[in-house]
Each structure stands twice: as structure tokens, then as C-alpha cells.
Length: 126
Image (cartoon, rainbow, N blue to C red):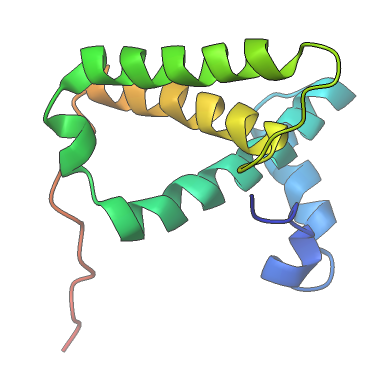
């Protein structure tokens, strides 16, 4: 899993203030909402990074059903690792939770017709 983001590392000094400003613009009123926004940024960074490796076709091939299978794999892994004395041999438990979050996002993107679209390119100005 990628390390948690420090907003200022990516957006410069005062970025934490910008995050709070974004939270306010979104109508978030609780610390839990603001903290969820931070976690969501971490998860989206992981999703974006993995898309560079996998691309969208592996998910698009099986659609929402394929996401359900992947979700089940992660849930079963977490259930297994929750047993006393179990330690992950490969990816961390945090990685599995991040993947579950991202599979939820991917499923919603599929349902909204936002998965496997052509990338938007910036228009060159003359």
C-alpha cells in the first residue's frame, strides 16, 4: 500500500486548509467526513496507480459481476486474517481494505457508465 498522503506534500503549504475548504464546499460538517475525504484521496491514488499497471479491460471484461468476485476474495482474505495468530504473507490488511474501497468505487463507476472510457485530453490553445 502507498503511504498515507500528506496533503501539503502534494498541494504545497496550506493544502490542509484547502482540504478543509473542499470539505466545506462539499457540505461536510463532521471530523469523520473530513477524515473520510483524506482516506478517499489515499484510495484514489492507489486506484490511479494500479490503473497504470492493469488498465480498465480486466474489470470491463466481466463488469459488475467481476467486481463482486474480487470483493468476495478480499472479504474472505480479511475474514481469514482476522483469526488469532494470522499474519499476512503478502499484501497488508490495510491494502485489502483499500482495495475493497476501490472496488466499491469501480462498481459505482461501472453502474454510472464511467468505467473504461477514453481518457479526456486537454485541448491545445492557439
